[in-house]
Amino acid sequence: MKNEAYTILLLVLSTTVSIAQNIPINESKFIAIGGIEQWITIQGKDRSKPVVLFIHGGPGSTMSQYDNTMYGEWKNDFVLVNWDQRGAGRTYGQNVPATVDEAYWIENPLTVKQMTKDGIELAQYLIQYLNQEKIILVGTSWGSILGTEMALSNPELFHAYVGNAQFVNFSENINYAYQTVLEMVKKSNDVNAIKILESLGKPPYANAKSYGQLLRIVKKYERKNSTPAPTTWFKLALEYDNEKDSKHRHDGDDYSFVHFVGHGKLGIKSMVSDIDFNMTGTQFKIPVYLIQGENDLLTAKEVNRPYFDKIVAPDKAYFLVSNAGHGHNQFVVEKQYEVVKMSVYGELADRN
Image 1 (tube, one colour):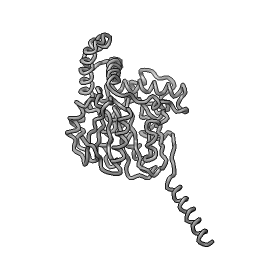
Image 2 (cartoon, rainbow, N blue to C red; image 1 turned 90 degrees about the vertical axis):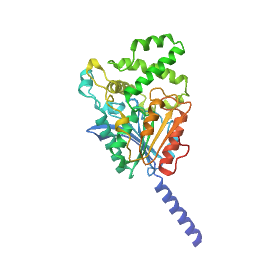
Image 3 (cartoon, rainbow, N blue to C red; image 1 turned 60 degrees about the horizontal axis):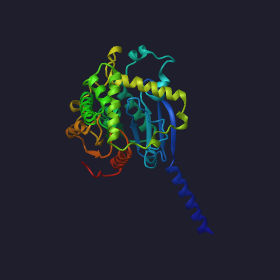
Image 4 (spheres, one colour; image 1 turned 30 degrees about the horizontal axis):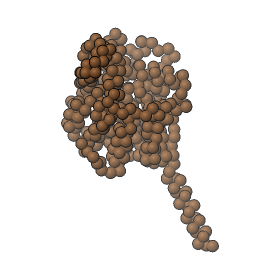
C-alpha cells in the first residue's frame, strides 16, 4: 500500500512538472513600440521554446491575419511571433486619423531607420517577456531588408538571420527583373505585356503605379515557372474577416508600397533607394542563412548569390529551392523549418 501511494505521488509530481514545462501561449495584442501602438501575435504550444520573429514582406503584406496553416506545425517546436509593422495592417489602422489624405502620406513617411528601431525594440520586448537570451529572425522580400538591418544593428539579440527572397540593392534587383521578364514576354509573344513593359521603359519610375504594373507582370511569369503556395495558407482567421480589418490591410498596403518605391508627384522618396548591402551589409556577427527560389525574378539568384559570397559571418549557407519563385511555397517553408531548427539545435546539412 505504501509503495502504491509512493508510485501515485511520483506520477502526480511528474505530471505537474510536465504541465509546468509545457505552458502554451496564444496572445494577440497591441504593445508600445517606437512611440505608437503596434500589433503582434504570439503562438506556441510551449512558451519556453525558441522564439521565431517573422518580418513580413510587402512592406504592407501582414501575416497575422491568417489561420497560420503555413507555419502551424512549427508551434510544436517554436514560439511564433507575427508583427504588423508600422504602416501595415492593424498597426496602420490603430494609428491613422479617421480621414487619410495625401497630406498624411507626405507628412508621415516610412523610413528603414525608424522601422529598424521598431524591430529592435520588439526583439528586446520578446526576449524579456518570454525569458529568452536571443531569438531567431526570419525575413522575406521587403522583410529581408528590414531583417538584415536589424541583424547588423543589434546582433546580440539574435541566434541567426534567415533571409528568404533576399533583396540586395533595390535598383539592381528591379532592373534585373525588368530585363528578364521583358525577354520572357517577348519569347512568349505576350503582346499586352510587351506593350506595357515597352511603354514603361527601364526603371526607375517616378510613379508608384508604374512599379505596380511591372510587378504584376513579374508575378505572372514567376507563377508560370514555380509551384504556388496552397490557397489554404491564406485563409483569414475569423477575427480578421471583417470590413474594418480588410480596409486597414488594403490602405496600409497602399501607404507602405508608395513609401517603398517612392512617388514623384507627392515628393515621396523611396525608402529603399539608398540600400546597397554589397556596400553596407557584408559583415555579420551572427550566422546568416539565405533561402532562394530558383525562379524568383524580383530578388533573383543572379543578384543575391554574388552578395552572399561576399558575406563574412560565423556561419553561412545559401539554399537554392527548385520549383519556387518569390516568397513562399511548400518547398520554401520546409527549407525554412529545417534551417531555423538547425540554427538552434544543430549543424546544417545540404549546403550550397
